Length: 198
Image 1 (tube, rainbow, N blue to C red):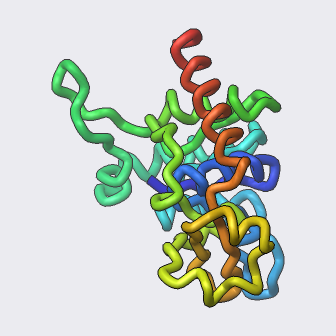
Image 2 (image 1 turned 120 degrees about the vertical axis):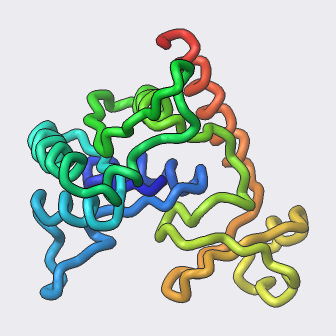
């Protein structure tokens, strides 16, 4: 499952990446003149790369739904990409409508809504996470000594495991810091929200 979050959903984009999903923004798909794609171009990117569009903009979601309906009727490959598995209790396949309008300003509400619609996993595992900054894959560092100069001494002396973004333009370093507890707490709150609401 892949996502594209528009500029109003940057926080969601980072969370989806941390959860291990390939999630991009319009800025990650610049036009040849380096301009940011407009609504129609964003929709075409989603349709051609089988990405689920996440937005707080009613108009772009409305356009995406219309385009999706046409593609579901005329494009067998497109349809197969958005048929979920396994089957439902009555044996039918579920069709995933590949866009979602978010209405809340709260991250917990929005993650709960995405999870309810697309059944995303709500567990954080740094070994499966993607770089929240650029969407690159995280690789475990075998020899932390090589990166000692890039890591604060208090962090290097306290931690034994480190990860690096594999994107050569990024190469951000990661470790299991105090932020890990905040991530886990937020995800637990999302699970509670889902249980109470759904």
